[in-house]
Length: 95
Image 1 (cartoon, helix red, strand yellow):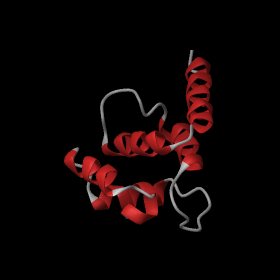
Image 2: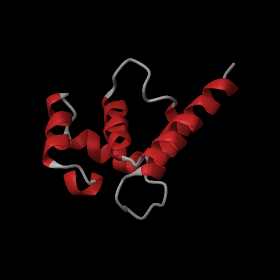
Image 3: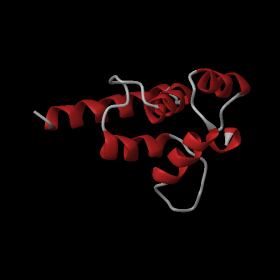
């Protein structure tokens, strides 16, 4: 699963230290597989997560939110901005 998410050893260990299991990573990869083709998890999966579950920065820290944040931290600046703008737009729609 580490390779599927393209996590470094350090990033993968941090998730394990936060009690995220291999099963939870597998479930995330399955639940938020937007293409159905089992391609590596990344940027686009975060949009799908936001549509389904909402803002992954809000507490409580469920395992899937921790996974989202780990993916987010790997993104380029312009991708991070796109995710943050999308979250903001979704949050504004809720009011």
